[in-house]
Length: 96
Image 1 (cartoon, rainbow, N blue to C red):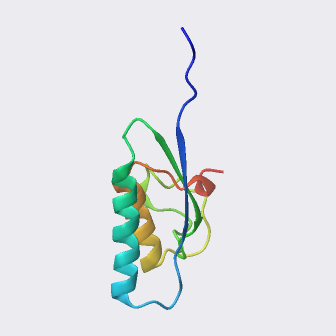
Image 2 (cartoon, rainbow, N blue to C red):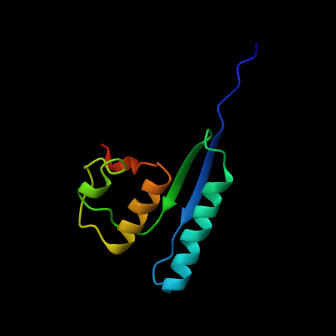
């Protein structure tokens, strides 16, 4: 039997600063739709800059935030944490 290579989907995302609330919502809606497109058993990695600060620690988001962040969480950071939570993702750079 032949071994199959795992499927890894790499998504490049860049959120613009200074957009209207409607444009920000469209960005998150589109990213959410893209995440729904891929099967649950396939790995999904998002690389890019979502232009938010997730802060030093996020007690409400311990599953996705490793507690090794920096700075202060902002509104855009909460959006990132909520998105990561809803898709069972992790903010990797907060884990080391």
